[in-house]
Image 1 (cartoon, rainbow, N blue to C red):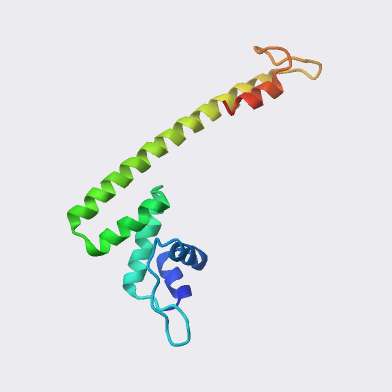
Image 2 (image 1 turned 45 degrees about the vertical axis):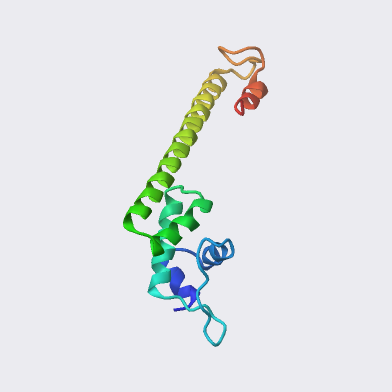
Length: 141
């Protein structure tokens, strides 16, 4: 099958497939005599595995070795690598969630103060005078 068909079967775009191949995440399939890539059902399974790992926030640099082990290793080796990668992805997801909660809390604080202001007010209620810019700047802290 060609790259368009492999893309449709795997749920990845042709550009993503080419990118993964260039980065060495996925093995390059053999070429047909006309120069087109010739994807097999095994390639499509590999593409789906890569897509699933990336969907679970596994970093791209961790996907390639896991794909290699998935094709040549034992179930125990795959399980160990998968456990490590998913544990790291979970920790990173927790860090990102904490950051998002902090941002959300900060946005609520700013919006509550801004919506409580009257047109003539020069200060946000409950905050230091004219702190709008400082509050937005402080969001990155």
